[in-house]
Image 1 (cartoon, rainbow, N blue to C red):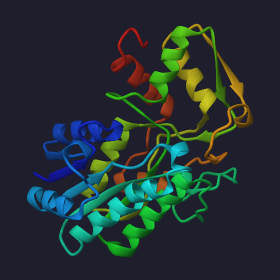
Image 2: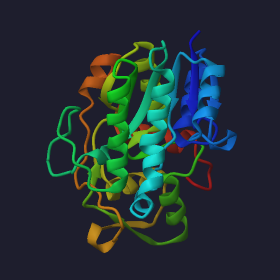
Image 3: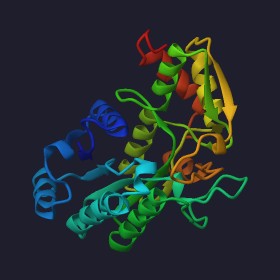
Image 4: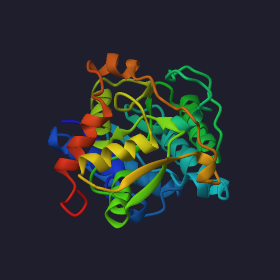
Length: 288
């Protein structure tokens, strides 16, 4: 039996899925979150990791408020670079593997083909820059003990996400407007959790892109969810200029997952299939 420590496992969107899939597969799982203490306090973090003595740490905790990061760069860096750097310094030289999550926002989105792991990075936002800094800190400290999974557009059970927001709006309005000129990879958290487990079992290290198959615009993603849930509201496409935000998003940030598929021995299923499972398995009738 392997021992896992899931940072963010009690309340996080991905963290809860990780706890579920790992427990289901007979891992011994403990969690650690902001509610347990100051994770940015080195002494506290060191004590917690040492006491729990995990074989694998899954770090799902990050500053994920993309627009707020533009005005809180120091705080974003503390969580997105400082925390993984601290974990790395604690486990360096041990047998512990760190599985850490990064983002498609490390890319500029100025291409029309899916990004591979070794493509040049050039974040357009503070959030993307802080996540890239976290990657670089890990690879510079524990290159043989870390696996970095870049992912995107998370949705899944047990916590509010883009899909629940869209379906709630569809229940209240006849028409909703959703951006159509940003294209990426919707990713189902139970699937991402399972791939993470398989990666950890193989003790793989380095950078992997992890997302469901296919790609979509936010508008197409929302439209498919509304259709599956039987909502009668219209989902109208708008441009990013019609929905101004503080942080610049990449226009095209589709991730090539062939390296992941080769490692785990399976191709990630298409996002519409995963979305169907989510809506019909997890969402209550009021949200369907």
